[in-house]
Length: 97
Image (cartoon, rainbow, N blue to C red; front, top):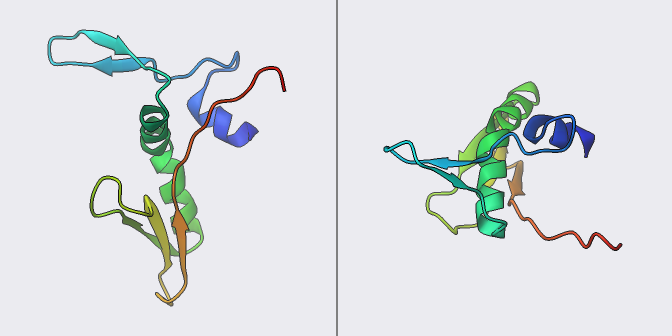
């Protein structure tokens, strides 16, 4: 878990992505909607996902359309019958547990 947080947050636990910006330079903060959080994680971690795939000799296949399963597939370069599906999911943490 610490490796994931190293890529998406600061040392004090703040997200490095703070919001969206439009063409007029208006900044909109990120909501806690799990669909938004999942997409930000996917975009933010794509470089690490790509590096993992290359280091392990896999190709990455992205979903053809939004809401298609899986979000990403790892396909072995030397044997395309070897495949791993990755689907990004988020949930809320109960701070009392």
